[in-house]
Amino acid sequence: MGKKVEITLNVQASSLYGMSNPSQSDIDGKCSLSDDNSGSSPNGTLEDFLSNVYINQDVKWKGLTVDQGYSVAIDSIVYERQSNDVNFFDTTTIGGTGGRSGNVTAKVKNDPSLANQIDNYTINFSVYDDGNSSKSFSIDPKLAANP
Image (cartoon, rainbow, N blue to C red; front, side, top):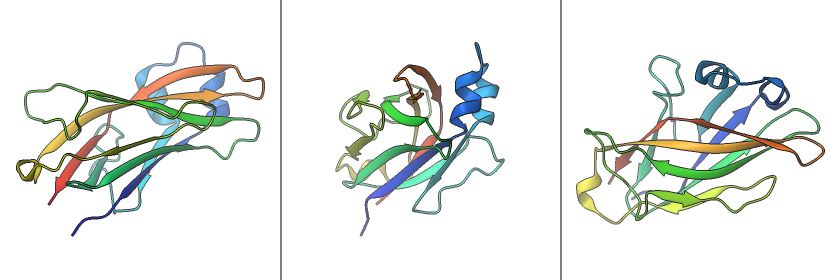
């Protein structure tokens, strides 16, 4: 039937952390998304990155960086109310586990009407440096539900 899907946010943490007042395009340029279920963006933008998830199955978001001395935490997943989408989860904001390497796991509702629908959402994340200081950012990808 379906399976758990893991979505990974890769961040050029030292570059992003070093920016003062970055624009959304600056943030998007220092981030990339991937998942373990053939997620992709038709035009290469984060905003159009689509992860295929499954009804009544878990979705996990985690943050990664290869930059020494930095870590990426997923702080929350927030449903964006738009006219053409639906919330796949029981709450509009899903909190993370907290800390320097926090992640978020949530179960897609067991609702067959979600099949072939789109969920526009926001990933709120933090980049931590060696000294435990952090800066917060967000990106806006999409989910698609499969039965």
